[in-house]
Image 1: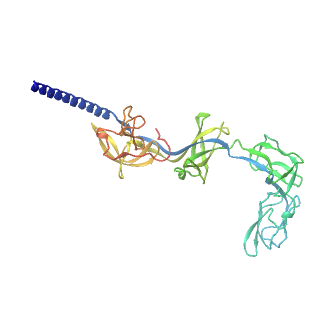
Image 2: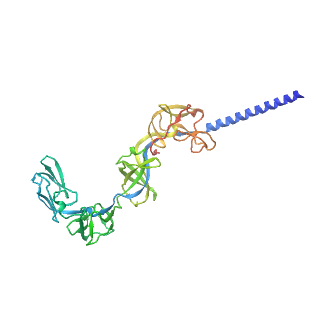
Image 3: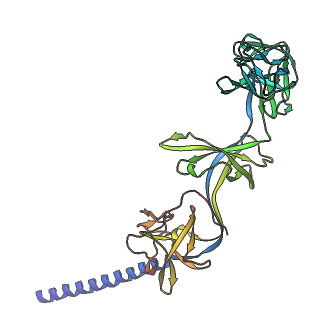
Amino acid sequence: MKKWITISVIAVLMVGGGSWFLLHKKQENASNGSQQRAVQTVTAKQGKLEVAVSGSGSVTAATDQDVTAANTVLSVASVSVAAGDSVSKGDTLVTFTNGEEVTAANDGDIASVAVSKGSVASQGTILLRLTNEGDVTLPVTRGNSSNSANVEGGAVAGSSLTVDTVKAAAGDIVTKGQTLATFTDGSLLLAPAAGTLTSINISSGDTVVASDTVAHITDFKTLQTTISVDELDISKIKTKQAAEITASAFEDETFEGTVTSVASTGNSENGVSTFDVTISIKDPKSLKVGMSTEAKIVIESKDQAIYVPLEAVYTSGDEKYVLIPSGESSEKVTVETGLTNDTYTEITKGLDAGASVQIPQVQSSGSGSGFNRGGKMMDGMGGQGGGMPSGGGTPPSGERPSGMGSGGGQGGK
């Protein structure tokens, strides 16, 4: 009886072991088949490839400034000297309509004269240049002569002006240099820039000093947008670079722009620094101040470039290669690369347009490790991480798809 029991146990174990082996082999084959199906091919394209840096911002006016009494000017009544004249200390050089005089602070020769009768000058305006006995040429400005501080005229610090006539009203569109108001001393308040006079808060008889804000000008026709650029990309941004701008309010419209300024100082938040980049908008059309924008600054571009998705290029040491389908397996082809953005890599040597290359296919389910588009390991569920090619498409151990390039961009179609 014991003998038959032993034989029965052995038989059961043999049958169970064989069944387990066959089931495991079937599952392994199914897994291999699933991996084999995970291989995907794409075609190398040819067209325009761009490398760009993008950012968001809002529309602002290029000119949006206060006008203060310091913007007042005086008209020149007469110029007493000409280039080449020799003068002595105290000689009158320029006289303004209110009687203010600019005199020579020392002996010397007149090197050049920048104003004439009827010219206007604000505090600090260069009137002429004087070469002294030490053969040093220095500028002479309104306000820096030996006696100008003793003559009333212009809203310099500590002095005041009385408004005579206001010549503009809020809502007026003014040009640069247009007279906004006159003062009883003969000085004028000129618009420092063109735009819409959004406010003017002086009246005849008012007394103002240099620090007083008397008006505000906004130019609603010359618009710009300022975007924040990451510190890793800011070195690539230069003035005069072209930009493409879109606005949330006009989804189907693109506006042309040009980089006009790049901030030298960054803004740090959570350990990351960004820099402001200002872009002028060539033709704002219906854009309005305050609208949100997205801007793309083109760093590099190339027409007729041959390019493939980033994940199609693998790196092994100094070698870069792609996998070309060949029957049931694939062939490793060494390539050279050029421009790279966050989606595509240019192939400059080793691959022709229209050639098929393998890329990892996104896994729809299951856990495990795969590679994201940057070529780094990604654990956990599938989905956004693409699995490595299997079968002939699997790169040698330790090799990874090439990483993402810096900056954004797109490939042409």
